[in-house]
Length: 403
Image (cartoon, rainbow, N blue to C red):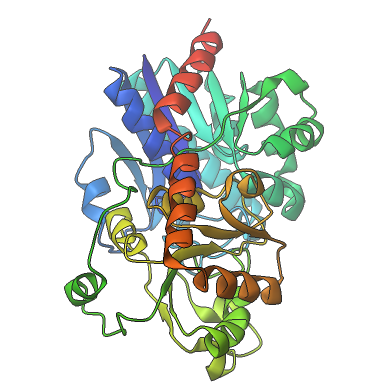
């Protein structure tokens, strides 16, 4: 089977991780895959993986001029920082002329991909503009939805008809959150049996337990942290959606009770989180902002850490939590998305800085053998979320979609 994937954004997002995980499994099963996404060409450590592989990746390159309109970068569904499109407009900010030009740009790029790749089926991530364009091109398609679909629908009233038409004309909607089935059904006015729950997975060949020396890893990456301090990882872009401000507020209490190094892996700027001024300096003690890093680097740091946190206010699923658990780390996460159903460690409520601090202090205070037992349980739980099984499940619905 020939499967064409599209993503509203570039790599480095949850939707991008889904496409990567599923597509690699599909290729391993003997299917042919093509992936289309927009990108603004910002240099990063993993850029060559995408720009150097045109057989797999069809990149809509920005800046671009189309239909008499100059687009500096691709637009975002919601006003939340994107690692590959800083200072981007949202779809809500586009003029009617810009929106019309963008639709025509997507139609041109997708028509070219259809002519060259000849897909049997398309999976477009997000019930949004790209899926709307496919609804006009006569190719069977399914939609992979994420938490941002619901957020975008509520945020941008003008886009609601496009999103609804995308959903209504799709063969199926996949959701990564069981709790979202009724919401999606009502939001788009579609039959409930059209919305299929398929969880996310993670790269089990990469995010696995390895015995690494903390001091050696620090030296490898030029870090000068105290290797004797516990390490806590947080893989999340710098945004309020990911609850980075909650973690920073909790940190002041954490450091007063259990000094540790907190490493935040994700693009963005603190100014995007603190729009009214920076946090007090004492809230930033022992926090290191690592920026966007390739998955292999994150896996290394997870393997020298003691635990991981994900204090999101909104989350579609929480793949970063699974990845940490795969490295035998207990995780402290908020009860959003699916995380309350699979996280091993502690589950707290969003915006609860005190609860987050208490949980970090509690877990870091456990005897080493208890922490290791908890980590082993986390890894065992994580291994049930396999990209292979998820790809096989998707194939069932692809086959139905093209009948």
